[in-house]
Image (tube, rainbow, N blue to C red):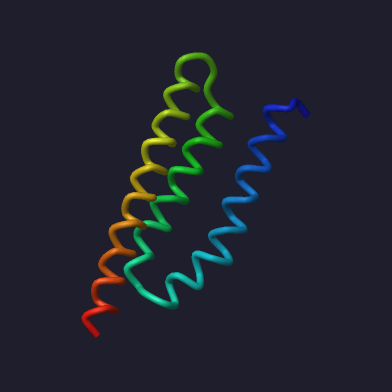
Length: 91
């Protein structure tokens, strides 16, 4: 196993653990978090699996696409959180 493979396995396992624990509690609190969590999982999978099946520039493209999708999911998390806070403060 190379160092690159170990890093991918660690990243994927941490992502899955986060989705299983924190993601579940967020969905129980507000259903609006479901879409960002799904998008986060897709972005993580794109980063990990894309580099396993491609090399060179295609692998770099897979990682950059995965980063963009993961970044979009984090923005969606922020939007849902802001709407949740506004709703909570209005009461």
